[in-house]
Length: 341
Image (cartoon, rainbow, N blue to C red; front, side, top):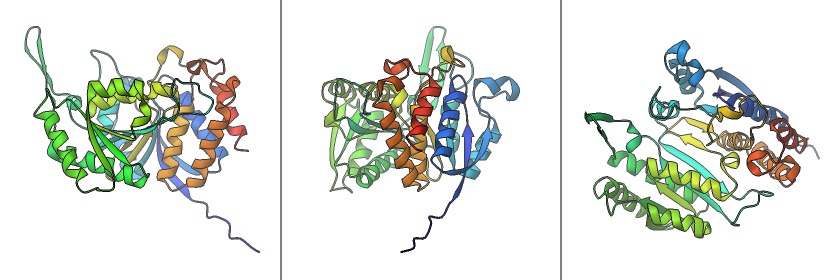
């Protein structure tokens, strides 16, 4: 009985290595993708702190042009100065490209010991407004005002995305996280929009929780949550908390999704203190590449890489420092590739 070989497709994807440990961990992801037999044509562009002096901005226009053409990007971490310096490259990418949804799946990883079992949730964060609109000014010496922007259009859009994701992935509940008891207008609008969207999904259970209570509930019983829907700041904070439940930012992937453009990236920072030392954990970027492959309808390769990652992590000798081990970037990368061969 003859079988027809599967058609090999070439995917053109923008590559942003980032700065700090970015080039090291993205190189690991590229090697794993190659070992999995995925044919990629990379459009490599520069962004981050290292290019500010050259271009006057961490996100040159050529980066945006490339992503608009390919509509898919794999991105390494980019550092952001604290309290001054250039504007966040990550925020610039999200707002310039309309990447309205930050999607972070968080689940237990085999071999990584954590206080909780059965964690399997997705954080869906509105990505373009709120306090991250960056609208700040000094009212008077010693007085600074920051504006939190919440719009009906953006709130309805992110709520619709969360419910669509829940239905697509067979998740039975969406929980909106808010502070509408205090921020009655801004968070109140976000909450009201989520309620309106929920009425169109009778097959998905819906509930609401105040953000501080949500933080407490996550560290008591994270298994009670399936999809968390949050505005920008709350999503940024609680997504890192969720990562801590399953081993840290080194094992959690992420994506920034727009109407027709998606940027896949690890959720951790650029860790300049260990850059160039071969110590960084590449798993978050590799798993972000897995998310990218599923987006590109390369489900077989995505599944193979994910299984290889999980198999490698079952052996403590392959754990990097952030996971309590002594392995370096190269050992972890090779461990994944060996399980693909």
